[in-house]
Length: 231
Length: 231
Image (cartoon, rainbow over all chains, first blue to last red; front, top):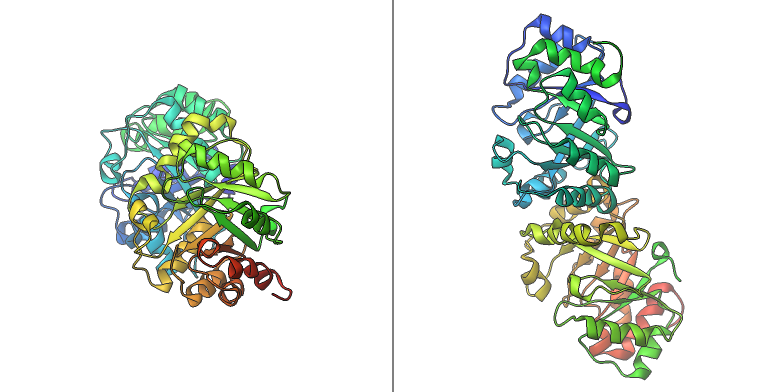
């Protein structure tokens, strides 16, 4: 298993989208650090389990990004728990987490449950609508959330999420500049290896998601672009 | 200065309430670990500073519990920053903290700014109304917030606040049972030394506030009741 603190590139697979067996094999053997299973729409226990079983054929670290409690199932190496810092709805900040603590608190192994402080920035993304996020933020707003994540909440990860849109590299750079122990994750809109490289200059972890489904060949190339080596 | 991690008894003084110089001296020389300055109503920069200056005559640790950004002033040993975990209003969970990060983020010394995960439990208290807290909570709800404070948010303190009402000792006991690194603070309704002793069985830090203004003699006795010795 590849320790989460050493990740630099990950693929995010959506259980509600289709991949061929050959594609999945190429992703899992691409040299990426991990596969994250997660999505906003149509994530069910069934399709989550189906994807888990397929990925488990390969010796790769696999994490579930928990978007609803129904799709939580044993068998993943890590469980990533988003807390949406710029949500207007307390349920997405700590409400659902409180419910989870109430139901499963005693059982949770905190070495594998990893909270992520999310900052959702694409106003047109489904995740922004779902979480009622305030997306109209200045660079200073985003860096303030980064400081909050690190200094007040001591979250291990701060996640800049543009989901489907290429984010500002400058925002990523500035957020990184105020973080020291909390690691920075960037995800959103990466379609090419060159783009991945730009964000990876500043992000500790670069997430490639949609490109897997829209431009598979380039998606695979992002691994070397981020981790070094010819692509 | 008395390190915050070693506190077991503190007095909470309200800048909007009156104490004689003699009373203040007796509190500050009582053997308590610290004086917290804080309140819900009528806390201003003026009355906060006035109380700070008075307390500073004595060699006692003094902390400001920040209830609004206007009353923040240098000169305190610690700044306690409540995040109200059971609030329905995101402003009281992280919104105001985000604003503070934005304005003062670079300047904050995180060795002296201490976040506290509050659970506000007296429905009739002003603080419950102000923060729009869900106070109708079961023991399991409270312990779930305690777990959330420790495991997800890594807060150094979890504060069970009954503010003006004697809380359930059982709730305090159960919350303590699920905490290990996060320390438990109890405050609310303590009027006598005997009562203080009950909560101090389980709380790491016992806060005595109102009794200072309603039953001064007993308030002073709570120090020894909590810290040991005849009273």
